[in-house]
Length: 576
Ligand code: ATP
Ligand code: MG
Image (cartoon, helix red, strand yellow):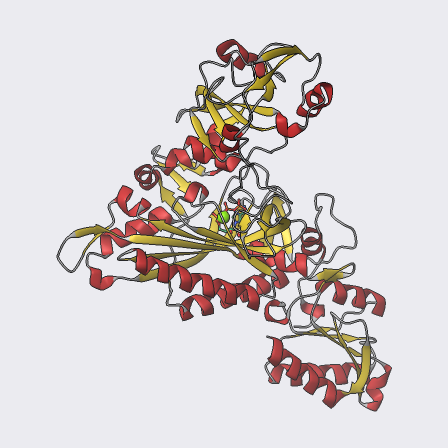
């Protein structure tokens, strides 16, 4: 493609709304175009890279036995009622009505649709296993769309669904998808880590997230260098502190602790360690109609952080059905007092206690009375939990739940996730097959997503410098950019055309910058666009020479036109 003919608009300035490199560079290089918050379009270069990611995904999915289909983005509410997700998915579900008042949503994911197809088409064990996938636009009305393609409201996803006779079959399907994902993200040039994950609104038992390592990522992962434990922080189990077996329980004692609303304040005031205090977190929950239906008080050791995912799992409610309570309002109903809430004097609320607190003696907790705490609070004697389970975050430096070594944290971008759904959807929606003995059995399902457009952003996040993008060859919009220093110079122009034609004839994808711009402008654009190989045709053209440079390297070399072409072809074939 000749740049003089290409629809390309690059920006010198950093757009106001963009904070992270991938967002800035994809906008500046004119690859994406914002329409409204969280909604982006793709311009010629960006779209070429999206299609290359899609092609890699298709090849690996087909290789792993997947069959591509294409379902509608629009889905009737009835199917979501059947699975129970019309409510559970919450305000992220983009709902709409037709002219007759019938309700629909724009698909954020397609479990219901695929289950519906399979329940009507599959009746016998002979038709299983089956793996169907699609690459399609998804819609999620995200609470905080941000970072461009990273968290958008309209995005492209590859979603696959596997259907098996039994759990063993599912295990095999899951492993095949897991391996396909490793190949896909490797081919896209990502440094990534598969980690154990929570199953969230999708449901099911096991899950892994594929996380591209990046400081700007929104996923926090905990991992152990000693035993290879790796999990999202939401998912990671924790080791409880050693129970204090022998210590005798002292009598409770109310103490005046004026103005000590935080754990730090009260620990300092009483001269105790934070690990000897109990922290309270107060919530209100909502029912299916969005009406308040109760209060929750969660308690963890003072130095710990509450894990929201574990809490909603323990309560068995969706994440959007709970939020921090208005403490004054909650006070009237439950006796809590903001900043001074403890578990001993609360009533009319669900008390969730972190499992670790059971073994800890003589703790300091709020007295549910302004400016007072109670010393020597003990589980069992002084308070009980309606639910007792692990609801804390595995912090950096905490003991690894597998081997006990101190864990590390890292940030990453979730580019894909695989789930073992089991029979959650086949049971609620009646997707049954007849086994060898003509018995009805629920089909065992898995589901597997890749954020195609988020992957594009993740690649840019990992492959850029201060001047622009540095595309890995496999998903670069073009392989080579030829920059002509003086397009008016007949020799330069002819040599550049000849190189251009030879490279294309050899199967390369080539851009020719024949624009009547200053060389500085062209070089800046070439760096910004991140095309892997840059060939510059200048004064040396008269002597059959060109300048050869890889975008990722600092040095350039003057070589003969023949050598330059040969070298480019070799590099492209090795890396594409
Ligand atoms: P997140 O936790 O980031 O909200 P998710 O776990 O809800 O994502 P999945 O339901 O697992 O997402 O969807 C499959 C894939 O789709 C994700 O791994 C991610 O790559 C991509 N994805 C999800 N939400 C978005 C979004 N808002 N914008 C772009 N890509 C997304
Ligand atoms: Mg996910």
